[in-house]
Amino acid sequence: MDYIRKMISKTGIKAETLTIIDQNNYLLNLRSTDTDIEEFSFGGYKTWARCFKVMSADSLIIAFFYNNKPYKFHVKLANVYVPNLESQNNLETRIARITLQRLKDFVEDKLIFIECIQHHESINILHVKIYKDNITTKSYNQQLVEDGLATDHCVSFKEWFEINKK
Image: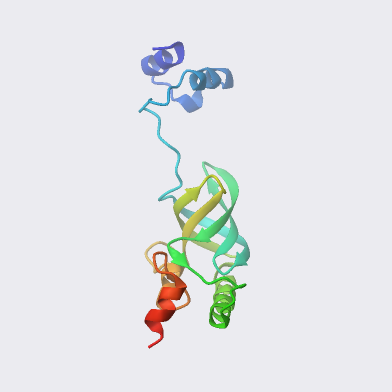
């Protein structure tokens, strides 16, 4: 066991209270097999956020506090598929326009409650569920599916059209 690990285990000092030099030494002595360090994930994190701008029918820019510091994120609606505005299919394009306007009315320049589902670090996009007031209400994502403006993530719009043609 190295110096930093001994210091932490003997004194009970948390890694986040170490000085920058001690933190750097701690990091240099970590091994990828260490099990006492949690992997970072926003999954399950719930908080209030402010929506700055709706970018498309399923993506927006929001800000929220994490560890007492504000962060801005480009987020996508989780677990739903919304048609693209540039679709060649006229019906998909109309649905995308309706969904875009509804999302703007629901969240733009407002406080919203979010539940983080997944964070894609490689493209820095956070997938979220959006709620009007708190997690006890139905999510906006689910409401879109129920209203026929989006599909569950696992069903493509092409399949949805085939199922609902009748």
